[in-house]
Length: 384
Image (cartoon, rainbow, N blue to C red; front, top):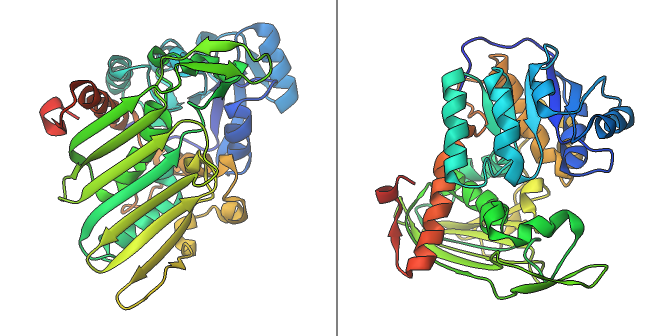
């Protein structure tokens, strides 16, 4: 969704959900904005005027509002960034769209497909530029990987396999993540770790044509990390998806709740002429720090494939900070800035927007449907 009129720089940002006690906004969005030209962190909102003032003082943000509605109405905000928990995305994103502001929402866009569709439809009616936080698509290693595949590094892709740990969905939980125990929260192993990962896979290799799935909750009770209180969990902790891509390649994805002592993340792409591998040491691999390896032709062993400098675009200061959670977010902000100001290169993709989020939500619902039905689902028949 591209607004018809380019924005000026700096783009004045208001963050919904920036807290003095930390969180994802403080960990990723604030450093990302600070490490980029073309943005000014101008405002924030929190659950109360008092907590907003505390956050404003901590992060030196000039304007602090006690509600997302107040922030959205401010003439000093061009871009509203929504970084709250998924169940609140709809209610806190809607005011910004109604005000005609650009919006960057964290992923998932909504707690379910219907909420995502509502926000995407509203953004389209208001003709505003939007972004959704599927930052792996903006990361230099993934863009380079996509080009390697499209340029024939592995020849014809025959298969791909991805193994990951979810971080969430393990044997324990803390206060900040108690809400993800409920499958209806919209923040689950399927929507977040699997959602980020399948979006990256399809960016590189194309969409799924059909899928089969197993989704299980093998830990229906989990333990609080400090109090040791036992809580019920309805969200899944094991996901195994197999399918066929539109290209005809076979794909297999397995995501496990919690962490593994063996493998945090491993992704292979195997073709008629070679192999490519993506590795990461962090379960939340889409934050950054991914490494590429490859071999083709007569090469007998994988070697690391450094990402060419051109994929860094103008963000050279992030080259040595690629393992930071803010790195992928910074690259997405850079693309959003270039879209907003009309300076995006003609051959360069923009950010994933609300319109992109809807079919991704639809796909995840089809995966869950396939697991419930115990049969293969053809995605095109369901609009995914």
